[in-house]
Length: 147
Image (cartoon, rainbow, N blue to C red):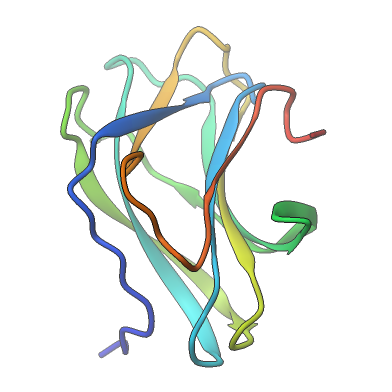
């Protein structure tokens, strides 16, 4: 059985758009309290249409100045073919194999992106806008991750 190292489960009040063509990316920075091998994350999300457009990815990135940097330390594809199409979505566990070592006190970013589709379709990820998570912040890009 996997061990739970980090947990943040708020009452969601906002959504972030992840576009099928890869233009819009979204994520969350986090700071582990204990060094460990990160093997999965859970996110609440839903897709914009019943049709499938592109491949959905989730990756763990190092950060610099509060933003994801470089290539993903580890990534996985997410099967969203059975994902619902309405709020409040559903929690999906994204497993990384192999996992990646995350160091205590070092910020990282969970980033979602899509490729091979069109920017008219994609996935919504739920997050908490009001209130705060002291270990990180929401991050996003409207240019495929360039900035």
